[in-house]
Amino acid sequence: MTRGGTVAKGALLVAGTTIGGGMLAMPVMSSLAGFFPATILFIICWAFMAATGLLFLEACLWMHEDTNFVSMAKKTLGLWGESAAWVMYLFLFYVLSLAYVVGCGKLTWLLLESYIPEWAGSVIFVLLFGPLVYFGARLVGRINILLMGGLAISYIAFVYLGYKYVDFDNLREHNWQLSLRILPVAFTAFGFQGIVPTLTRYLDFDKVKVRNAILLGSFIPLLVFIIWHWLIMGIIPREGAGGLLEALERGDTAVQPLKNLLDSRTVYVFSEFFAFFALSTSFLGVTLGLRDFLADGIGVEKDSKGRFFLCSLIFIPVTAAAIFYPDIFIELIGIAGGYGASLLLGLLPILMVWSGRYRLRLPGEKILFGGKPLLVAMTAFALFQVVIVTMHLTGLY
Image (cartoon, rainbow, N blue to C red; front, side, top):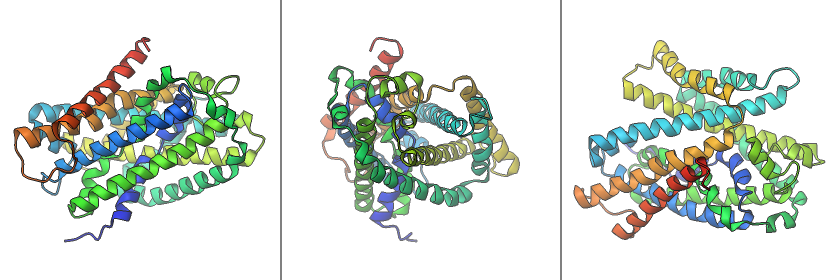
């Protein structure tokens, strides 16, 4: 039975998955390098992540209709691959869930700071949005349409109203020596591969349609991110009181410094709305995916008791960590990208395709050109991200 999916709808699905909370961390982390070095690295990360998306597609086409990361890893890499996929998936999605609870909790506190302590922001946010995850995909899908609409409107309004505040002198500042520090955050921001199995089924396993949807859908966020960086880094100075480097030290998102720098309350309000919509849509997508992954992995029925148990496994440890560590949003996004995204979304599809093509000799057409040399180069790049974030965490870079 055909599902009637089109390339345009598939591309929007990829774009909607990609555009999210990582955008709020990127300009703050990118302030280390400056606008132009960051833009070059965004293009490199986009090309790499689009390529790994195509590798996931190639692996999906080797499977039957119902597939996910774990089943693909098991078929191509065996038991060790299945176990590694489990560990990497849980690590990435728990870290991202914590990052988004921390980010949304801080926004909630900023809205109610006259009435509540900072730690209560995360609790209130989880109490409001956690029940949506409990009730499942149908309700989340309906709410997400509204949130995505708000995301688009607030982004367009912010761009339209904020461009006149851009100072081009801010954009000329750069530091190439620190540019590699932003790679882990860019990895997280360009992550969409979790949607590839769903996209493949949606487009009826038509490899041309899925390939075009991945390339177009991932390219749209690249343009969105570059414009977003141009605005934020052009408006907010890199150094000094209220600058991006200070926001990086405080663990703030990209929009919080705007409050004290702009004389336009309207522009700041739209930036806050954008931050809320970006984080909340990411939060719902990540936690719902984690809930379903846990349900399948540990064999929990999705009845009322089962859903409550699954949500408890997610929200109790995540909320507790957010209460004790409310200023680690930027750090978490970097860890998620440097370890989780690099290994699960970068290295895993490379290893699966290498094994499927050259060890198991699975039938099918190569989706990504380049053969073994390209896969080796991509492996080196994925492992390089792990080295970068490790050096940062240990104080070596």
